[in-house]
Length: 191
Image 1 (tube, helix red, strand yellow):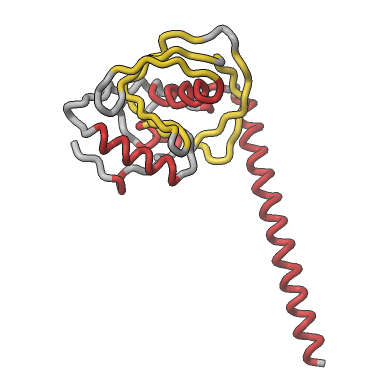
Image 2 (spheres, rainbow, N blue to C red):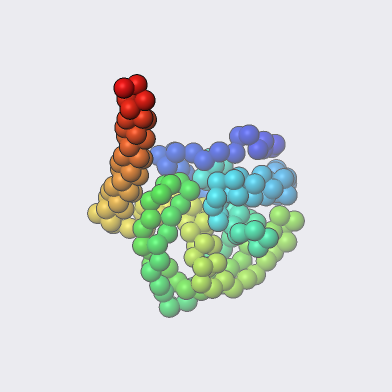
């Protein structure tokens, strides 16, 4: 199967796969090519992770990282999680601008394959553990929306809408002042 970069685009949240993804088959798809495409898209969108389901691919794969600290993850498993947890605001490329506070384990022990099909075992802590868990959720059919109550989700969306409205109002006020100033200059120049 050939995957073209032009076909790798975020799908609407309503079209997300809501069940566990299929296992990635290294014999069917060029994992290195897919990794490069996914990394490019993640970077272009300003994300720190991008999972296959977010772009409409039913396969157990995601990329994560920033700058040179990036990894590709195929067929991951979370082996263990710390009992220590924390609450942090999370956003998702699937829901641009929406932030919700989510409780997650502080550290995890994981197993996954890299783009060469080599088994990797790692322990992630802090933000890296959180990003891994967030992307892993997408592979199981879960998004940040399902991680919070309906009320908390509604409040987060309302906060975003209010923020957008403030930006519109600020921009509108600025434009109105510019128009008023231009009109005054034209009026004063014509008398």
